[in-house]
Image (cartoon, rainbow, N blue to C red; front, side):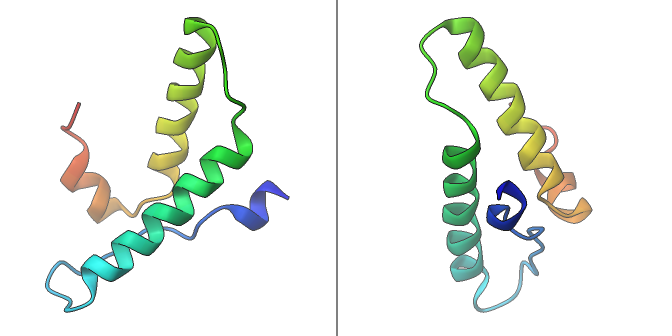
Length: 74
């Protein structure tokens, strides 16, 4: 089931006239995917694990070009 919900790889042409629309759709799809696969946790250790999982899922869901743009962000 999780694989069916996983968004496609986010690839974006920065000069594209519909880039904002494409990004907004991908972001919502990705958020729904994370909410489906990760339970709401109570402890800080569980929250840290969930945050790490979210980061890995994000990295796996973006193209190399997009990764290059955000890789230095904290």
